Length: 253
Image (cartoon, rainbow, N blue to C red; front, top):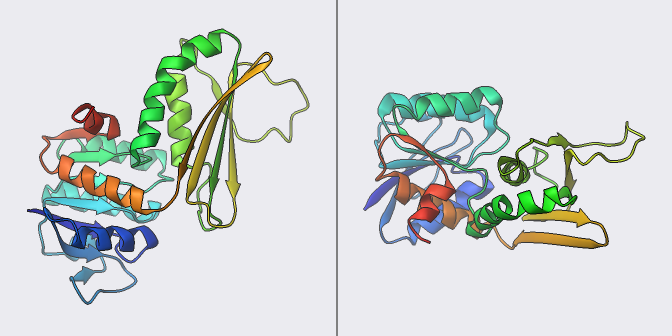
């Protein structure tokens, strides 16, 4: 039985993960962390530093501002950590890297199997397409409550393209101030916010007289919750280090 603490248990994703954990036979939700309130079925603490319970793993789906304190507490208590929160600063990313030298940390901008398989595909096809003159554009759509833009997943997909190229491309988020033809040394990344989009990402390779589009749509938040629980099971048995979805997929594909 894997004991899990949910960091951000009162948020939208936190509630979904908590509900799913209750129906996961080999996992036990032993506590939640959230400054906004408690639960009738498990203890909730306002701050991870005040939680006396030691789990096998912590799942984080909170806010970017809450992550640095979580990392410090997890490192102090030697607790494996799954970080799903997006919009993290460079300083927090550095903190994650440093902390992974003392505890196992699973960090991914997207917890979906399909998105991470697409990331693998992009690394394989991007060199040929870009060398053949195809332009790369990424469009992401999310609900009107999402506060960070572009999404962490959009950046992850752009990084997958860039990682496979001999010369790195620049990321461009706004062309309103430029009046010039599009150079082939950039990746356009566009964020749409509206309605109740759960998450949709399209990677467009636009060539001369032909277009290739790879698209992924998340139909509900349950898929993200299932991925985060799977990551918690994975990281609970890992040695010290920094892991992501690609590491977990290698054990399954």
